[in-house]
Image 1 (tube, rainbow, N blue to C red):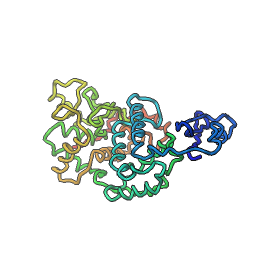
Image 2 (image 1 turned 30 degrees about the vertical axis):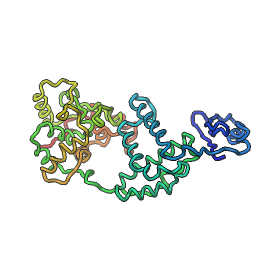
Image 3 (image 1 turned 90 degrees about the vertical axis):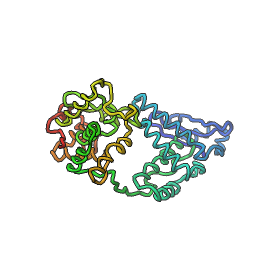
Image 4 (image 1 turned 180 degrees about the horizontal axis):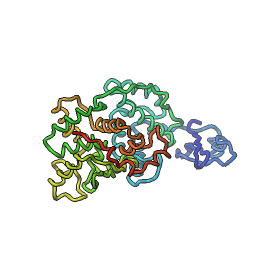
Length: 369
């Protein structure tokens, strides 16, 4: 009975799912307590009792079912936008777009004409080897993970009889070190900050280096987020659109050094018409910066002028973390300041004991120059 599937649902108990031999429609039934699931499934239709369960021959190609997966992604985005309290079924719009690009650019060209019930671990490994011709390991892994999630979706949707492969079936790839991951020294950061002739550019980079904020959080700052030497992080900008912080832990307050406070005051003075609701940083068209635009238009040119090997916004964030750790700041306080989720080294109970006022201390300030 190729189409018969058994599902152990934690909430509803054992379920059977099969394709009705006459109508061709999918049927899902709850198995009564004490009944054998297979015997119960056979009892639901006389032809099933004879072992007859035809496989649908139409609409089985991966390319023909991809829209169903996209609809599932849209549902997860809707859960995120509406703030629904679901554990694993929420993604940001930007993440959905990335996943769809994995499918469109890499998965469909190689596997789109295959039937979804024929895709196995060997095909995932072949795709991985094909991708190695042009991509690095850390770029390939998310693509293969997208394929694995697609196949799990098809399984749960009743389109295939079993999950065709798991992560352990896929050849492990080594990450490759990239320049983007490089952490600059304090001397390099100081030199980069001195290379600017525009105050707003220096302030943007100084915020990254002296607060450890993500660039998506920096570009979403409004003047109302600043108060008496403390900056409140409450939102992020994703694809130049305002969104929530990366996680609940991302909502936080960070103390500012004296120089940064003075520069922010000077920047505000030069924009005297700005209200609390106005953003600190907008481009020449009055729109929010995208993270890549800020990288290419602000940080990278400054690094070139200073004459150093390139690094990115993440490098500045790691620089900030290292500066705090070098001051022997408690790890859980560092996590609070940078808005990390609960780490593997700190229990949830311990982490939640950290109070916001405990991290708003002068000695927790990173000050450069």
